[in-house]
Length: 262
Ligand code: T3D
Image 1 (tube, rainbow, N blue to C red):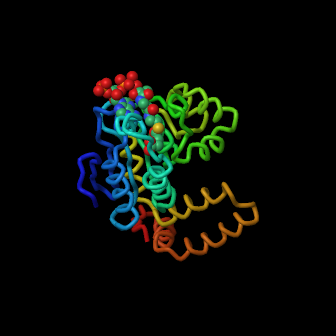
Image 2 (image 1 turned 135 degrees about the horizontal axis):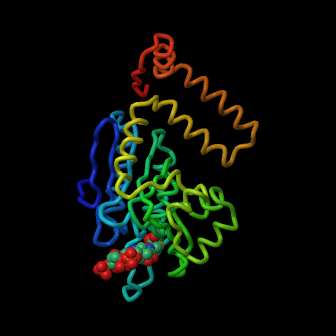
Image 3 (image 1 turned 90 degrees about the vertical axis):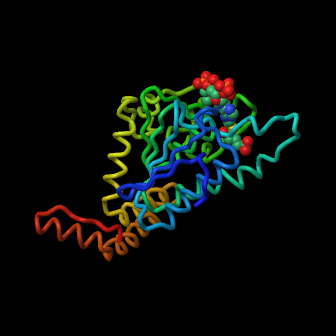
């Protein structure tokens, strides 16, 4: 894993905590933070001790998207397609393809790519004071980090277009009411609630949870017939897992299950 203080990394109770850590820039991405975050998610894929991920930000913001200090037009015209291909797209693919729950705790403003990364996580909680901004419209860009895919799917075309074209901030409560995130919680309990949720999931039957994530994501492009076939195949695989055997045994023996994630 890359050594960088732009991402703080912890592992406790099976939860890999990844904290965006450039608080003076509201955790905007520079190249170093991109690489360190990607390394964190690569570790989550590779390390069986990691059974859930908890992503959050240090300081008063969650993430203000790309660091615009690195995009000064006086220094030439950048190839933003290259940075999307090099950094944002691989990150989004790592989050979506990780067959372990990714919890996101949005502790403050989430703008540009920062908002869309939060929407790509599996369960997103936000502090009541947090707001989400499709800031791209203010600087002549197009929503990235999967925003043009996730927004219309999560909230419909009318709301997606209005948010993306106006860049109006959306409060956490409304984001939850609209289905963009799971829940808005009191600011001072956000981390406690998010950590408790991540810890509970990490101790759960993570093999089955991972397959559930895969199935729900596949539904975005599958027909009902394809989805029914996928459910059959995944259930066959889940039925052979150690976690399923443990879950049923614990039920029959009236005890608490001890899942291994296998
Ligand atoms: O470039 C590519 O590779 C393509 C990919 C693009 C992906 C993107 O995310 S594009 C969108 C980039 N992000 C933005 O346009 C958001 C810019 N920031 C803002 O609009 C505001 O800062 C916020 C609405 C997020 C928060 O406003 P507020 O009033 O709470 O805070 P602030 O005072 O504006 O910001 C606090 C500090 O963070 C400030 O620094 P200072 O003056 O105290 O030294 C500000 O400059 C800095 N900051 C905030 N966002 C960024 C940033 N510095 C660099 N880049 C930022 N994105």
